[in-house]
Length: 463
Image 1 (tube, rainbow, N blue to C red):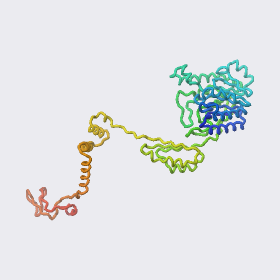
Image 2 (cartoon, rainbow, N blue to C red):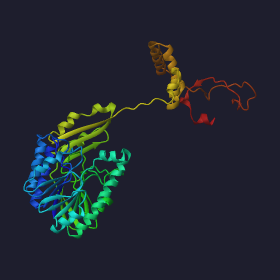
Image 3 (tube, rainbow, N blue to C red):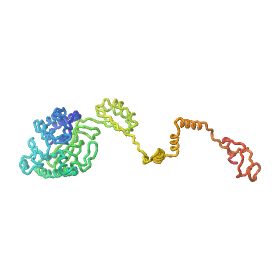
Image 4 (tube, helix red, strand yellow):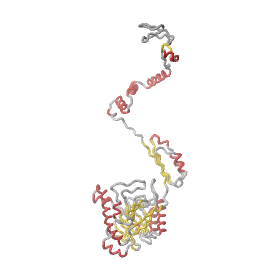
């Protein structure tokens, strides 16, 4: 049996063009392939919609179009996207075949193009005995979004996060016992749910690790379904075990910048005991994300803008607060005038200033300055001297003194070294001469002719 699996359509005014283009393509492709059943695994809408909203009308049109070609099962998704009761009207939008709304935990059999739901969470022995001879084409184990608020009332707010996974695992294990009987009778079994699998990857490449998610792979495989069709995560991914398969199709279109991978819907081939799924890409919009760790490089942006065409572009950068004015936003907008959309995001890094530790404990300005010098490893005496000068002098006197010092430094003569010239006469002030015309070795001498370094030569140093 071929099943067309759609998820996360997110019809809304802001998403209408993307959602309807992609879902319309997927519906047409599934009909052309001859799919036997259509499954929408939650979040058909993005939020509460008015009855007259164009986005609701567009979604209803596509669902009715699909129902004219095959039976359709719609699962309740996240309550913030699909408020309870949103899907009730879609049950009235069937065509040649019905639209079944799965808004409670139940098993649903498809027999002769019509859906039959269990009275309780799973089929009882009496129910199985009644329709197994008829041999349903497929039995769905439907697990719509669970209201965590109601669970919190039952088990307490603190335990609700971890209790949810345990509660769903218990139901999946119970469904597994029924599904094994169905498989033994040669009936296909398919699970349909909406939630997060521990360890799955989001459309932005983030691994969902934690203990407060709805499902583990172990619990899902315990349901013993040939195929398990999931919704909620917008990235297509699959897990296989012994021929059985669990998969997300991802969102039908690209609704956010930075999403990884292709967008599309899954075409499933399901038989009793095995399943396979392949992604059919939809014509989702192309997005370009350009990030700069600093001010944007306009040369690089010009190169990208030349090929941006009808793409959706986001340019992001981060810059210090004092340099934020150097970025010409209008020039960037002019470069991407031909793009389908441009989003410009600047992250301004504020200047962070911290006071010296302990400075507030000092009671005088002199003490605060000394404390700052200690923390900043700056010499204090020169700064303390200037602080005193500011305290006792006026501005004109301080400026005059600075100018006088600068003038004195400008007219200071070159350094002169005074030495005794070889021709100078010397007299010994103490002791006796050791040779004619030569001074005594260790006695001071009187310099007759002071000179500078200009005349120094090797003979002098030899002497």
